[in-house]
Image 1 (spheres, rainbow, N blue to C red):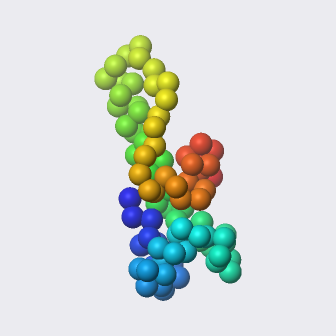
Image 2 (cartoon, one colour):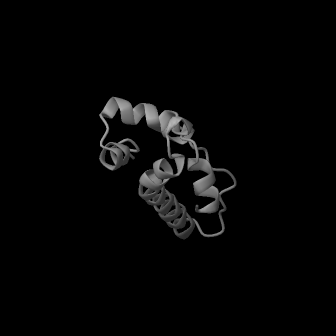
Image 3 (cartoon, one colour):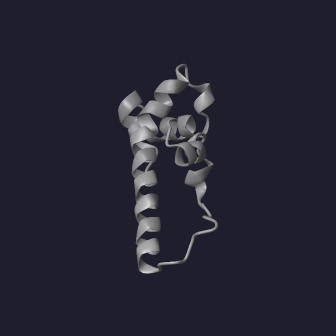
Length: 88
């Protein structure tokens, strides 16, 4: 997932400035707009995770997923984990 592109487009920033904003959203004058810009990417990732878990369940009836490990720098994004848990 590219979490930077929506910030580049939505705020007309350079890639470098968008990366900084992504890592430090609280520094934005309007934090809510940062999350609104990234929400479509959060939604896409959430949908992809749900589909993957559904395919696993269909392929392995009776098996349950006890834990899901999220790795990579993208999962350090402020608000992403909450969005995946709560859908908002």
